[in-house]
Image (cartoon, rainbow, N blue to C red):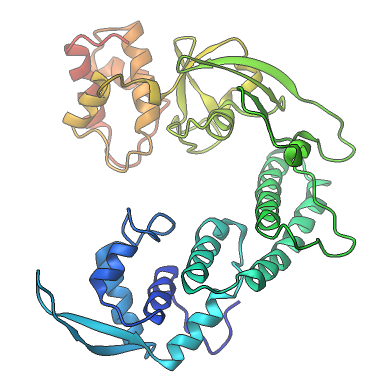
Length: 372
């Protein structure tokens, strides 16, 4: 929780404030640091407009103030800002406060570690505090797993494994720091093992252990995905979509609903479209899987090009599944009518376009001779 006297700032605001605390700076320099290719932008990207909005907000709150102007040889004079005493105190407190949620480890904790590294500050206290925050979360999730069933258990296992992985990460950052008395490293359990020539470090060999009392229920599968053969040990209930994304890294296949309603996760299995959230990984044993990532070879696939030219996407979340379903449709029916296109894509939902441009794109691809 935030201390009562601290302002409620966004993560971007805190980062900008922390950078200003390093010394007088101007918005352009901060925007470069936080740009997509910047030293800190690789962790948390803030666009130029966002940087200047944060600066305005911090000035209004009295956390930074003007520090004069800096002449520029290539543009207008730049206004420098510096942190006030209140800003310095707030930033120092925030930088040593642990992220409150496991989901924030990737962003908030990493950016704090980067900022502490820039200032030459020992992160040990932050790491200890972060571990103290995560330990009860892991313990509570583990207790809940014992009584959970169905998808509730699937979700709890995901949260448990994620929090446990965060603890292991913290331990790796503190190799010389012993675990508190009586605390044992929690087994991860149920993580699929990959047999693709990469050997796990001995310290991580326990990742394949099941949860206590459940016994070993791993099954070996051999599946060819986008032309590459993978041999893995997986839990029998692992969904194909999770196998594709989390085991072999095919994140081009999105997860939309996990209920087989939206079709965003559609892939081709032995040439036929399937919703990968409705197929178990073990059912894909010996199968040939094609994902959206294999559609383009040296350029956009004609279907992808048609979707681009006909403006058949807006947010793009449904597009991978829509294109894979369309590929299967054109394989079976190279010259479908508009009605047949709509029928062929009825299992794929789009919440943006109204479908008209999608139908137009598939028709355009068909007219250009695409049949796969």
